[in-house]
Image (cartoon, rainbow, N blue to C red; front, side, top):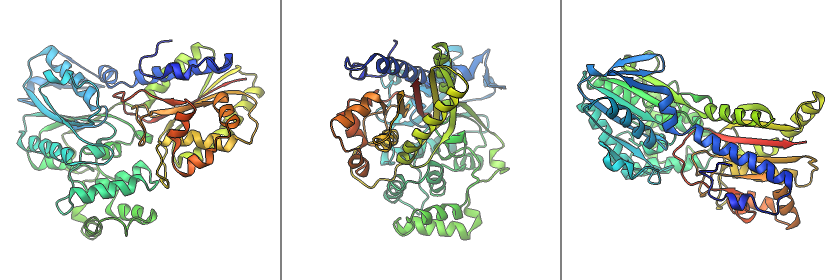
Length: 476
């Protein structure tokens, strides 16, 4: 086994496991390692772009870099650090280009030492709640945009987490009010698409407003390289789409707040701004066909699909019958956890009917939500798996199984884990030790449950940021 990222492998491959349990864990952990490696920003950048003889090639497009007087690099997200280092390597390996820039990344991002030789200013900002440092960094980016000329080229590097890391509230909203709105939304159970609809209408950067600012100043060319962490890979939702037309409206934002009973809880400045936006159509974010997007070029260079392809190849080679059963896992985490039992039963029955392999692998991707009602420690994948265990504890499951739920960026919720794994061994330990799974669910304390059973997955920040991965391995 080649294990580079998972730090608690010895704990997960303990000697008490039987032969089948250990085998499934080894396959599962190796598949997780492969998934992480597949979606490393460096690898995605190298597959998507190259520079040769002064020509930049991105997918099917070409840009003559010699035409531009200066290059600027801006952006933010959990994976943007590695994206920036890769872009710098491309630029400096072929020519001494005149460039500068600034990016906002989390303080726990890797490669901090490598940035000591970089021309790019690294600004450490907070996630998931924006802070003053993030605001200062975003203001600096907008100043670079305003100081650019029509003959310049701007790279905007965007990845998941950018919504929080790139704050620039409207003039009538202060940072403290923005922080309160974010906290309310994150604990409400709202989907990332719903949360970002509101974020876009409170920002002068998101929702296409970066493109609008650029058009109203220099009209420089902008190339946006994007790594997706959202279900469906909708560009207007990734980091709340700073360079993408916004199809949502102020009316949509108010409707979402009303649906989650937040309208009377948000700061008065936010409520007033949203209502003003509904009344004045001129305040809306730029829509499709707006001329401000004429020199904006958006490229999706990676998503979780890359990881799925690599996992499928690995498991196929090891005689697993592999099915990608869903690319849009959404909804309440503990409720989806319950549905895993029926998903497993369905595929076991289908496999028996068709005399397929005794080794079955089911892959799902997406992003679940957690409605916070307790004060415990956990995350969406851990709560999903705890919901599964709580549901099946009184049911018979006569098959060897392993389920991994993981946030591939390495950290989820307010825990230090990327997720967890459950299998027959974890279920047996829970039952034999009379551990009350429901008590942990009620308090949103899934991490403490899996820590107790030695089943949490620990990697630390990976520098990746795509959709979450659910991997189910079955041995008949």
